[in-house]
Image (cartoon, rainbow, N blue to C red):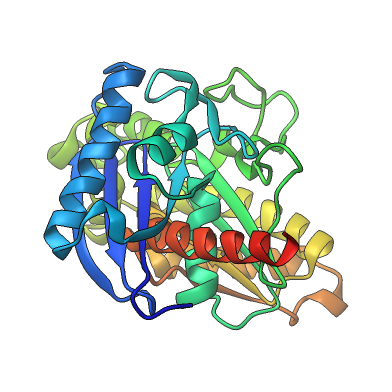
Length: 329
């Protein structure tokens, strides 16, 4: 690795685009952030990705030729080999050739990964899971994403992403999720599920502080509003969050039994807003459901890197993937 190498990380989230340029030691040199535009069209969206990277390079005082590689974390199921987004419902994208576009524009290798995978890899390399043999990440938000790093490698399918924890069935005859599936973790424990239950409680008069501050429109009941409601004494909202944490604990139990991770990282806006509730409640309920031999082999911790987890992880995963490919050639 040359000290003059520069890496670009990109996080294509549901509501934002974030690009950061790093040096060889992953010190940030420049960045650019934009909001995504819902259903703006695939061509326009790809152009905005390129523009965001160019602005980050300009902020870093660098040119395209200075970039060794680009890592990008993308939502939705992906074709890893081709670097194509199969589907990103929040963006209205289908079969988008992300890697080919970036490689054509910047004349350097590009590596495409799932955005939550990128975030978990970032936490493994630089954050809450640093140094662990196995790290599992669960990130509740509008949906629920999951990822796993085992012995330094992201767990991925041969041709597609995996670890879609949010779509695991948890409850027979439960509510529908955004994909129309019954009783999944996402339908029971996502921020959207919590907001919906909290809105109903506010409508019934059980959460007066939430009603006064945010009303009953779930688009206004985001992580900060839920936290404020609890802090101001809306006990039913706290119970709703703890109930959702109980569903998350079932996913953690499954992952502990399957992968025996030393570290389970909880991330996303909900956890950032209420780390004590989520970490304490998920830890308590997870341990109560495990065989004794498994109760003390792991820790549950909040993510440390915030918005930079996915973009930093994407850049680091690009470097590792290209390094590994070089060893095989």
